[in-house]
Amino acid sequence: MENLLQITSSEATIRINGIKSLMQKIDLDAVLISDNANKFYVSGRVYNGYAYITANGNAIHFIRRPVELSGDNVEYIHKPENITEILRSKGISLPSSLGLELDLAPYSVVQRIAKIFPDTKIVNASGIMRQARSIKSEYEIELLKLSGIKHAQSYSQIRDIYTPNMTDLEFQVEIERISRLNGCLGQFRISGDSMEIYMGNVICGDNADNPSPYDFAMGGAGIHPSLPVGCNGTKIKPNMAIMVDVNGNYTGYTTDMSRVFSVGSLDELSIKAHKCSCHICQELSAMGKPGIEAKALYDKAIEIVTENELGHIFMGHRQKAGFIGHGVGIEINESPVIAPRSRDILAIGNVIALEPKFVIPGIGAVGIENTYIVTPNGMECITLAPEEIISLD
Image 1 (spheres, rainbow, N blue to C red):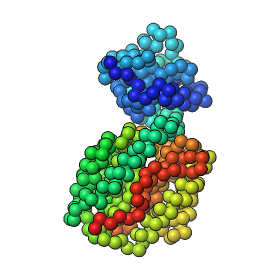
Image 2: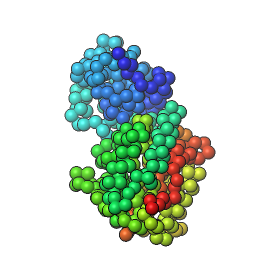
Image 3: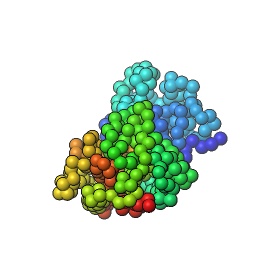
Image 4: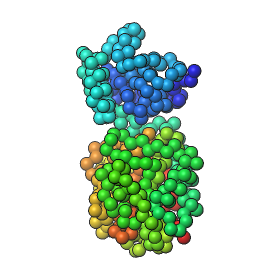
């Protein structure tokens, strides 16, 4: 039989204790986790079932599939109703308050759980889980650094796979191929149902100015209305910006990185905007120390953009994104969020992708995106690929 935990018991304890500490602050008796990303966080694997954590006890993993997993706190169930039966058999009192991931769980599941715990107050635990996961352990940081190394290695091969007369789709397929061969898992985990993407975006020319329904910094029309984002079959031409923002999930923990390529040279405005993006990342990474408000980073970026008179193309042209950075880890839209109304405050162990980008009509998107770890001395970059515009000639 295979052990359920795919992380060390000490690492699991660190994570569970972090969740329990947040539960105790709001007098929450227990949480019942059903979201795959959160189950992966507490166990190191995805399974069909639930993780049950009490404020004063250990985690119990109630599993339906796969069969034959072992562990001290593994219990097999056929249906959710078995959960309360097992708790009673263990002499564990049912909670007065129970946290569920109400931002993520289907209504039918919430209603079913509520019937199983009829005398229990149901509380939204989505925020607790986001807050717990926003502070990465040393183990998680090492996985992110490894993803960053592999991510940069894949990007270093991009120039060699380009051939003249390629479309953006053909270029992206080749980038995806080398990424997978280098160990990329292929999955971009995103919390909630408001964003969808397949392995990332390669956006060329005016396609960068096509509005998307998703809350991404870059849009793109996509190749089908069922997934209206990213490459759309544009042929790569001289003097066109090609932004590559492709999957960095090599370890279950995802780095986020964008770089710009071109055939021939870009115009002065594009070069100016790209340099401004690099400057913003430098300034914000030095500024991003524990205790600083996330919105202060956003305000600083706007100040730099305004000084350079580039506000009309910053974070989009026809449609603008309302943020310049976001937490990454198991998913690509974690806390903290670098936005004007963000209430987040940076802490040691936050991992943040900064993506100050510009969209220039007739040219495309320029700017960089890097992933950073918040340290006592500022933000450490872990996506160490060249930042200048790279010629494909």
